Amino acid sequence: MKPARLIGSVILACLAASSRAETALVLNSGDENISLIDTASYKETGRAPACKEPHHLMATPDDSSVIVACAISNELVFFDPRTGQEQKRVKNISDPYQLGFSPDKKWFVANSLRLDRVDLYKAADFSLVARVPAAKTPSHMAFDKASQYVFVTLQESDEILAIDLKTQQPVWKMSVGPTPAGIYMTPDDKYLLVAIMGADYVEVIDWRARKSVKKITTDKAAHNFLARGDGRHVFVSNRSMKGSISLVDTQTLSEVEQYDVPGGPDDMEIRADGKELWATARFARKVQVLDLQQKAVSRSIPVGRSPHGVFFLKHAARR
Image 1: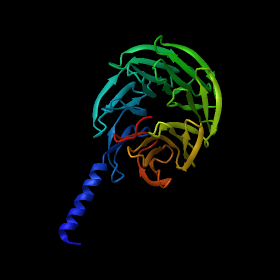
Image 2: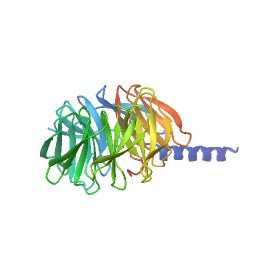
Image 3: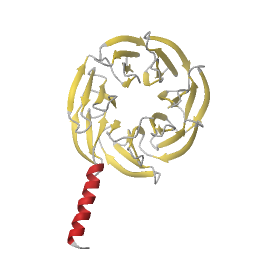
Image 4: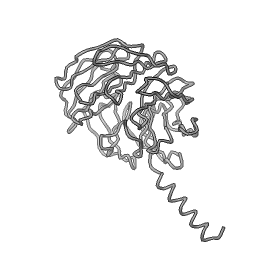
């Protein structure tokens, strides 16, 4: 190859890599910090301090910030998703464990797992509106499309709780399988999918009729959800040490694929092109990168202790 052509090829390769590169943020609950990972080299480039006992992270609705929930220090820490630099802290958010914004962006909800409570805030300024008792052990949440209800899993009482956001009152509870964790509203707004961590399935709930209609067998310790981005499929992390991730069809309500992902896969993120799924391995101090074309883990990225959240800007649609 001629030198000029070789140089041109190198430049094009570098440009392609740089266009793909960005920073992934991974929350290390056990180390009270976040890992910054270059998504092109798949290497950790640094860490940023977070807070006392951080659990879960999520982006603001416009993706301008990533919020880390700080359960013991009673605060929210905002990070720039492009650089990982801290932006601000919001104090006096009591025991935030899991976070969520309503689809209409009016409500910010924080589950207080340790205090058996769900706190409702105005999303505009994080001012407290109501505290709803939610025994026992409120964990994950989902919303209906109309932003009328937030649905919360109660891990230790094996129930889901529905709260009316307009009245800020609980309206119903129903029993589900043992140790419910993640909860997901299907794209058609018809069913709630509940990951049953104490077993090996996803329970399908007709939330308007308030009844269980099906159990989708996945794998041991079904735990959390992430939309595939195609408006039809959703990933389910099965958080055992052996570990796997299931792909569930929300129209047929069936598992269509399953991938081996060891180390306790928990929270997930998916590339905008849909080719890679990243999953935090809670028990292995790693992020597992699943190649969705090869249907196998292609890389394992060392991070901190008990990684409990992952985010990057160039992700697939949340549908």
